[in-house]
Image (cartoon, rainbow, N blue to C red):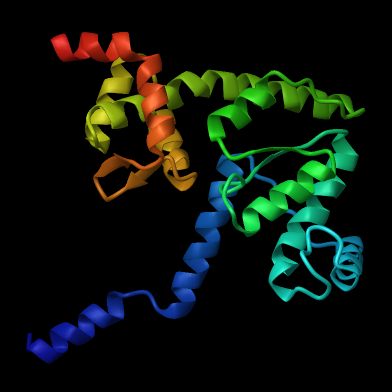
Length: 234
């Protein structure tokens, strides 16, 4: 086969733009289903409320007709609609402690009586210790199930962060092997590690995870220090 034919054959195997877009949508949809994430579609009421806030300059808008705040306004009105449905709402916002747009959104949600955190483990801890207040019994059961699941996952997440910090980066295969030896399934370890990576706690660099949120990783390592020292002695 000539070089030009080889290049052409390679190009034909590569997905086109439409395929990449479709695969991206499918991956996001699968990720949401796997992690029990509800995607909120904008409603007519959301649209109306957003434009009322836009023209009045009320939170989360910093000023009247501040276009850059429109995305946060969508989040804000959707969050308030959920708070009204469930009686309370816990919000996870990555940069809520920094001088950024996220901080302003966090302040606006707090003023609207929503709980806001920028720490994933703290966020999960609040959910675990809170009883759902929705009047529907099925929602109560789902809330309890999710809280139990979060409680089961937390020690695994702490171990993942702790080992990544302790070794200053660890291969995915080694991390999986270590945690499987502690009785955790391979699928659960890999899924939780991916979620911690997406949440900005560790960094996925191919075959290895590196510490990213150093404070969280360091704190996790402190919690399992005896276990880490025991592994070092072996």
